Amino acid sequence: MERRDYLSSLMAGGIAGMCVDLILFPLDTVKTRLQSPLGFYKSGGFRGIYAGVPSTALGSFPNASAFFVTYETVKSLLHTDPSSYLSPVKHMVAASLGEVVACLIRVPSEVIKQRTQVSPSSTTYQMLASTLREEGIRGLYRGYKSTVLREIPFAFVQFPLWEFLKDLWSWKQGQAVESWQSAVCGAFAGGFAAAVTTPLDVAKTRIMLAKTGSSTASGNVLLALNDIWRTQGVSGLFVGIVPRITAISLGGFIFLGAYDKVRSLLLHTAKNGQ
Figure (cartoon, rainbow, N blue to C red):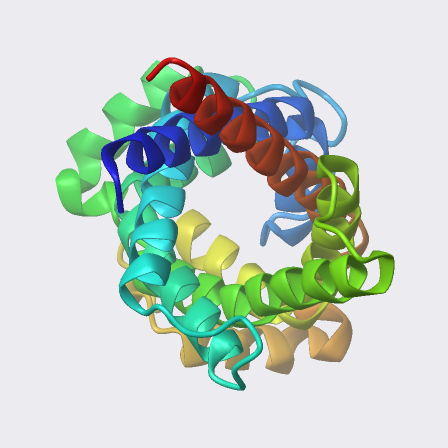
């Protein structure tokens, strides 16, 4: 991948990520509190809906940049004909590796954000200090495995579907899709992926919020899923699905649409500047 492509992916991904995370933060807070073992109202209800936003603001740009730089780099290394049946596999591999890298940044930010969301009386700094004091650096990465296990299936569904829908729309109209069309494809792909991966998201939230030393805090995703199933049944596995689908559908529209638009503008500017 050329240097201008690398920089364009980095900047476009970071800008798109910040736009989505900050605009849709209240929906994310509602989803987290619904999934909290304490329940929605004991976790804060609708109070302090922006609790934890500094953690998101700091982590959003580098997290999204890391994902898209990895995604575009792997796509360029695994070059295949767009019409090839291997094209979806390429997108799955690229998106999965992108998530593994991005989670190195995302998970610490997510841990502090979610703990602050369910304890709105605490500030982001206080929650960070408390986590480091009680669990050390390892505490910031509690839930890394469960986050990756959530994001890889999500990426397996979202990105091949997004690329497929863009190609289909492009073929139907006989020209490349515009940014708003890419955004619509991203909204549909994101919403569908969000629905099917909700149980993994619930397990990830429970692991991050579990009391230190508890069995759930060990990070075993199957154990967390089994505990939710045993105590709450199917409804417990899909708690928070409505705000999750809503947030990720809107997020997919803004995130992938903004990414395509900003990246094309940056590439066009760089090309004209040569």
